[in-house]
Amino acid sequence: MKEEICPECGAVLTEGKTCRDYLDTMIMWDFQDFLGVGQIHHLTVLCYGLQHPATYSQKGLEDAKDFLREFVHEKNSFEEHDKRNRERLSSNVRDWKIIGTPEDHGSYAAMPHWTIRTPDVAMPGLEGYPERVIAWAQSIYNEIQ
Ligand SMILES: [Zn+2]
Image (cartoon, rainbow, N blue to C red; front, side, top):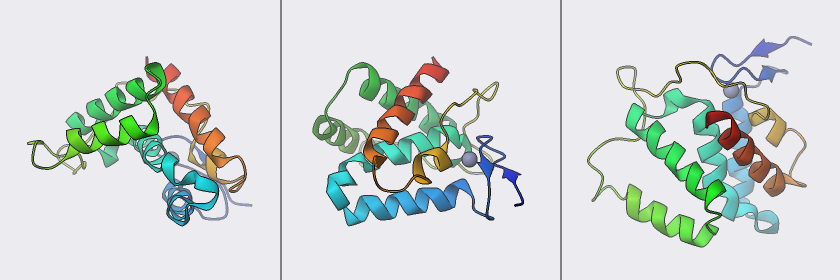
């Protein structure tokens, strides 16, 4: 089987899939809300973005790191987290953009050595997915400190 390496996070990719394809699968689970996994959605997107920093602007990446720190360190509930996120990211109060462009995108001085990457979370399937996302968030937190 032909293997490729994701240029952004270093994941080993097989079957011609990209990390983005795996993210799309997880987003589909989130929106179907099987077993109540929909609440994990923001964290999934956050973890993906932190490992693919060019999806964010520089400022967006810094904000994403704060958001992860709050989630992991302060153990905020999803409800609190969602509410604060909505307040913070509402376009009425935000005068900077989150989405990366070729001119302004996030990056790390050195790529952190990720221990859990997008395919690791998605490939085992829906069962155990929320637990894997929480472990993913914790691992990213540990690696970007
Ligand atoms: Zn990747």
